Image (cartoon, rainbow, N blue to C red; front, side):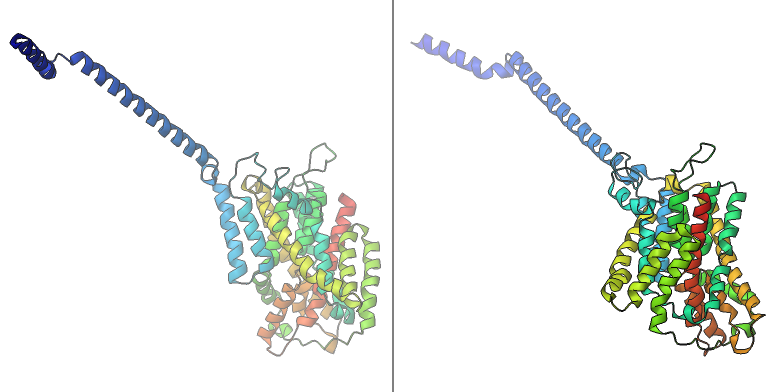
Length: 441
């Protein structure tokens, strides 16, 4: 029994001291190896997860604007912000500059091509909205609203002032010649020329017909798509009327002439107001049938206003309808200024020509007003300042004329007189566009 207990005790002691003697090393090695393998596997899985996470972040970054932005995008976004600032801070045509400025920003947010995001990508929402610009749908609707809110009384009362609106169209044909000199084709030059009328809707309408990137020239080349640059230039100079015109007025018109007081216009009967749009529609469209979409809607809108029987339709045309179309037109025209398409030599030339043409148009109206005074006597003389309103920036140029008149003589009210050449400028620019389209379309 003692021997059995001794053997059992020795075996038990060996079992307990075996780890200390290193007799369990193979088992421990296996455990350590197994532990290391598990740790290595965990580390490998963790590394793979990190790689996948970084790859996902990288993939996401490639789809952001930060990865695709160009200096051109940033430049155009800055221009959009300036447009918005001018509209809000200085009240320069805010109904136009703010939508256009927002559109410029929208059009220059960098995007990945192929996702139907850009305005030039077929099937995108912006592309569908831009259809109204490309096909010339929006401008006639704008003219409908303008007609419904325009009072032609001052023009009916003093028809000779229509000549001032015609004289200001010299800017259109001067710009046309300048564009030809700079190497633009005939249709492109015709579309660029209308900027001289300072009429945004007419500029869009004509460029959508002549400089749309679709028409084929006689030599087989395709005309350039200049709708965006032409529209932006026309609306920009319309908004800058209070900046551009006053220095020209003070330069060309003496202080004495600026003080000329015009006799009050005669009262115009409601019957005359109703007859005018019908007669004017027939006469102007017979002269320039190609301008029918613009002139037809202009005088139709005015007939709605003056008939006395369609006030609800007239109210819709001059408020809700024109507001909706102005929003769509402004945003899509602004969005069409994608940096890769807009920032070109041609765009810069168009802006330069636009500035020169606007100056020429203003000077043409002012100088022709002085010329008319050579044949007018006494109370029939006109204040030459109203010649500047011959450009078709309605009603801003008439307001600028009125403001300049008040600066020379606080009792000299020129607004109603200036509206006559102002509205005739709208008609004149549309007729000019129709004539150009007839020859070059």
